[in-house]
Amino acid sequence: MAYEDKTKKPGEESVVYGRNAVSELLKSGRDVDKIFVHKGEREGSISVIVAEAIRRKIPVTEVEKQKLDRMCGGNHQGVCAFAAAVEYSTVERILRIAEEKNEKPFICIADGVEDPHNLGALLRCCECAGVHGLIIPKRHSVTVNSTVEKASAGAVSHVPVAKVPNVAACIDELKKLGVWCYAAEAGGRSVYETDLDRAAAFVFGSEGRGVSRLVKEKCDGIVSIPMFGVINSLNVSCAASVVLSYAANSRHRSV
Image (cartoon, rainbow, N blue to C red; front, side, top):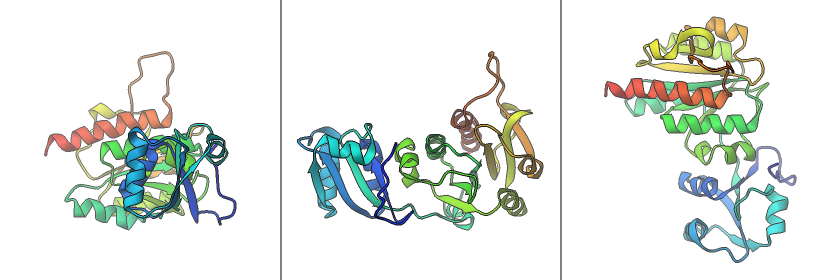
């Protein structure tokens, strides 16, 4: 379980741990208050992290492994950083990013994903596919915490995340702006037979309930991944990796 600094107000500061996550944090330009490294470990990627921290005048403290374990749990890989909390974006900003890149909007929406590891993995899928931003609801969803950051392997530092009061209402607004909205659910048209070379948003549902009924009704259509095995569903991040990668391929084929 990721450590949360109880001396800080919620959202004021977060702990980012793991070599890749801390490296991506430093690359992102976010404010970093301090970095802790396992005493005696100054080789490989940790030496690069320490050198970058020194260059940016970020305090680096060597500590025993037991202290790192208390702060982050056992999967810290010898390094953790205390960073300024993630600054949430807006839907408008996500659309502006697409416009600045001269690209059709490419958006992911998480409809009630409550597991931080799944949200982190979903962010990683978004970053790898070139998604312009992720939208999550303000309620009934995990927030971007240090467990999400770790699971995202640093992607949270590169993918803007917007919180909205109501996913269904957000979809209505996106459709008015010419963004096609698709729910990724069973029982729809094969994703491989759908024209995805367009401004599009893809909705992925919660672990247990899937995409909510109202949100599905608001969407322009449902896209499904053909299944050929005994198990008839994928984890949300696995499904996202298939759908978003195929959509990215469709978008770039015409470039």
